[in-house]
Each structure stands twice: as C-alpha cells, then as structure tokens.
Image (tube, rainbow, N blue to C red):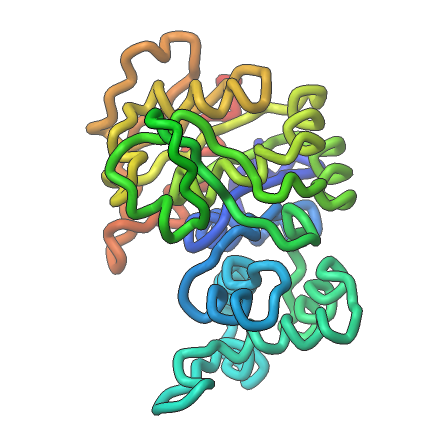
Length: 299
C-alpha cells in the first residue's frame, strides 16, 4: 500500500465499536500486527443483548463485527462464526460467533485470550482488545436528573445527555492500556458517538493513558447525521465532549464536505467526500487511508 506516513508508524490504535471501528480496522489491515482495535463492550441489543440478559458476560457483538470485517477472504471458518440462526425458538436470531464467545467465558477463558483464539481461527493479524473484561453498561444522566441505562435506550433518546458514565465503573483491560501507551497514532470514530466512541474513554485508565501519551489523535467523523441524541451536537460539540474526557486536544479531524467546522480553527481538518460507492453511508477504504495519510503530513 502506498501510504508512506501510515506505513512508517510503529503502532496505530483505533477506538470505538460496531461497524465504524470495523471499517477503520479493515481499511488499515495492511498494518497487520501494528494495528490494534480497542472495542466497546456495552452493547445490550439484538443477539448480544439477549445473551447478556440470560447468561451475563461482556458484549461480544462489536468484537465479532470487527473480526468479520478484518476477515476479507471467504472461508468456512468465517461462515461458521458469522452464522445466524433462523426459524423459531430460543436460538432464532442468535449469532453463532456470539454464542462461541459466551461459551469461552463459561470455560473461564479470559476475553482477551478468547479473541486471540478466534483471531487465529480466522487468520486475522490485527489485534483486538475489549475495553474491559468485566460486564458493563453505559448510562446517561439527563438534564432533568433522570438516569437512563443501556445502549439501546440511550440511542433512542431525543434529548442530549448532560453526562455519561459506566455502570458499574469497571477497569480498562491492561492490554488496552499498554496499546495506548505505545501508540504512535490514536484514532477515534466513526460510529455512534455516545454509545460506540465514548464508552472506552469513560474508563479512567484508558483516558489517563491517552492524556499521557504523546501520540497524534485523529477524530474520524460519520458521513451523515446520526439517528441518536448525537444528532443535536455540532462537530465542535462532539470534539469538546471527547477532549473533556481525555484531558488533551485532538489534533486532526477527517469529516465530510458539508460539515460545519466553526470553532475548530486549532485543528487540522480534511473535509472530503469519503463515501463508498456500494454502501453510501460507509467510508471508502482507499479514500479513508489516502486522506488519513495526507492528514499525518500536516500534524
């Protein structure tokens, strides 16, 4: 890949969840072992939510999603791990990969080690680390004083929360802290702002590690308006939310041409059309790498 500045980096850490983190990881997969994803584990919807409600454990859905996007070669192993049960009954709608991860938890295998096992199974070279290895939910405190618990409920809010916190206040995974402490570049986003990007930053240890690490920090914006309370926030509002958590400035932003960049004069910004031709609301992998490489020249 002809991305000289990206290729020169010794370690890149991407933080987030869902399809957004998976897309970034897949775009940068040529970095192989130099790429690490720190994955949000607060999901409580769909198959993941049902498993958590009935069996406990951490949220595996976003981790599985990232693994599938990093596995770009069709294989029986990938098909097994992504298989979703159909029909009626208790298994209907469940993803087999989520159930496998839950079974590994029951076998008292560390989530970090479980991911390594599956990475080897799928031949994925990039690293993936859960933000925490303990079960946790995201919670929001509203301006009215009401507390709203759970990713699904928060995404359905119309009013903007005044504060987010983890319930319970779990520690970050040590390997995630180590990855940040050795990072040359830290990427945040794209994805659901309140429920995918922010949760890892709510762990005190990760936020502190980011604050103390002299690495470039880049925010990758969504390509459209988010269907959540984050729709109420301008780009500079979202940047300030993050900076208040990590106690240091974001240096670079990649966003779309229609984005309002008012109040962000202290940032290096690239605002380009990044839409994939096939899935318009997702980032084109090649364009994302190209503009990220260009951004690094100016930081």
